[in-house]
Image 1 (cartoon, rainbow, N blue to C red):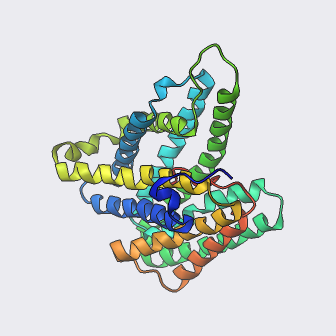
Image 2 (image 1 turned 90 degrees about the vertical axis):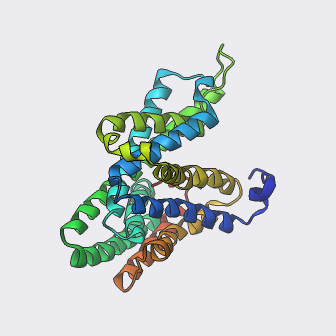
Image 3 (image 1 turned 135 degrees about the horizontal axis):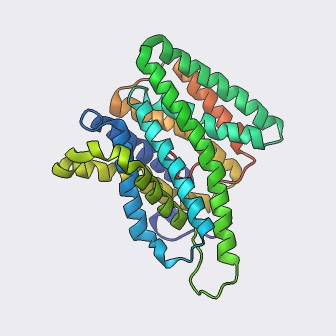
Length: 311
């Protein structure tokens, strides 16, 4: 385990940092929900991706790295899947409670753990997660009608994209490590994970632009809307990713699993406080089941496999 970084982040307890990360991420989502009356949900998601891409490009300056065609292609596919995950998540939270949507979306990483794992913990985890999702989906279908169906389909797509994001993200990270270690006449280093994320988000924003950029016109003429979009991008993408990098250097896989299980509950708290979406009855049961499943399936894996730039 590497030494702790300096500064305030380095001295803060890891659980507190993780709580701040979750609150920022889902606070950004709650702010996004407030914009849906003015800008369509898919376009808000695209704006978040585009602004986050600009921030990451300015930060990482990926043109300074040594890229191969394979590196660029992997980062681009990774970014398009990431963009699809965010767009479908925002479509879902337009009609579903935030805590419910986040819990159901976790079916993606839990399923990856169940398929790739070999122990009884992973197998039990997918069963517990499925029970939680059934409880949550049943409540929504009984109260939400056609809108609930649309939201559940959208969050199912987001969960599938999250699973793809995990698998592609591992491949991108492994490729970045190989590129950094490989001898080359060019003195420039190969791309690291954050640099690949910057290129991937840029690719996702470019692919989505022809379909989603048009309704963004009000943001260009309203400074308040523009600031809100920047806030969403920073809160939901930049802040969580930066904090996560500090946490991942300081905790074990088991500790990270417990912290990861805080996220559905954190989303439910943010939804209750910011959006008046109070969970009750079977919703609480579903949230607890999903949190237990996260702990069961994440404990024996490396920290950070499931998060990254999650929706």
